[in-house]
Length: 90
Image (cartoon, rainbow, N blue to C red; front, side, top):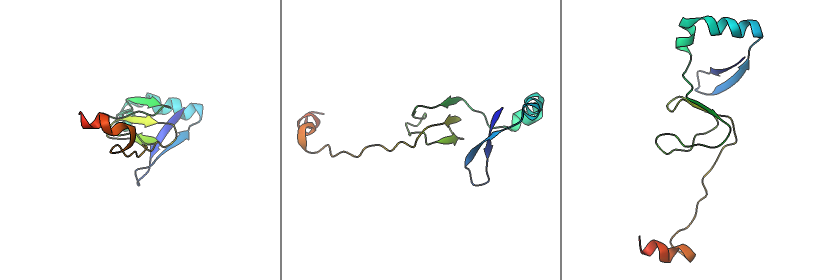
């Protein structure tokens, strides 16, 4: 059983528990309530409800766990070149 361990610094790490310990944790209702909610686990880039790119690891605000590479938006100059005439009409 894999769980996410949230460190004091806010970083998430995967912990692979032995079968017996994983089953024990799953059965403990009180402990389950204290575990962070995960709404989505994904390996493809996603955006959260605020249209932010979700970074790798667990995002507590959106409850999304992204298991993929860090995505950085491309910076483009939209004031010149082929896009300038189209932007003029917006």
